[in-house]
Length: 175
Image 1 (cartoon, rainbow, N blue to C red):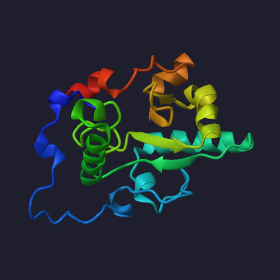
Image 2: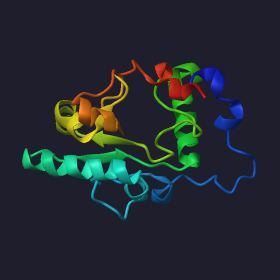
Image 3: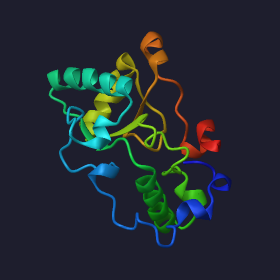
């Protein structure tokens, strides 16, 4: 998500001889299918910021009353897993500049700090689009309708802040 000038090739490559050459697993934040915001045994959920998790659970209960389930596609991630996702995005999109529209470095990603969650299911994201501000859950990027972060101001304002077109427009990603 940061601008390409703020990521280095060292962040994008494995260190030779690194003990972290194995594929990331649940301990790194990989999320198996069917995980909900109530699955405390999954590190990607359990390591979310406590206030974000509390808001997600309150919203999920309200959504369930409307017949909508929240599935977690991604939550907290280890720095190693985040860097792997970035390397994969560079490979897929052909450049660090284009990859930055979708994946942040480990040093800037709100997933690594536990401050972001990717919610699955179009019904869930549609529900959050209409009701998320009541819980402080806001879509941050126009190009990522699944990505939500906690914005407590949204509760009082009854509206989420203006979205960025994509992460490259987010000043937090310019570090």
